[in-house]
Length: 63
Image (cartoon, rainbow, N blue to C red; front, side, top):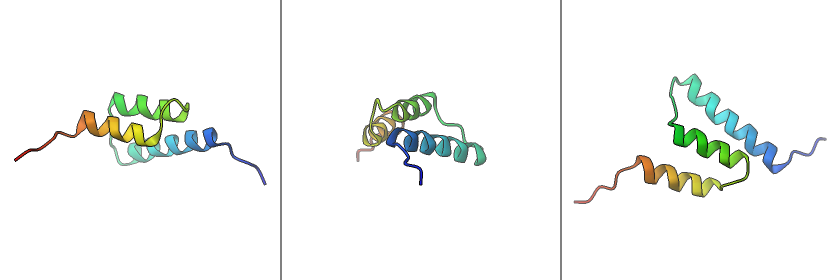
């Protein structure tokens, strides 16, 4: 059985995310694409990527 490295698994997961978005006819922002590439290169974590995307795309609502 072949051993899959963490980096290889992350690259495959990123490719799957982008493919799923394409199938759904959705276009991720340039920031999301860049973040996914940083994630697959091991330069950021999934938690940091999520926080960055939320900070950029989600507005804070205050009553």
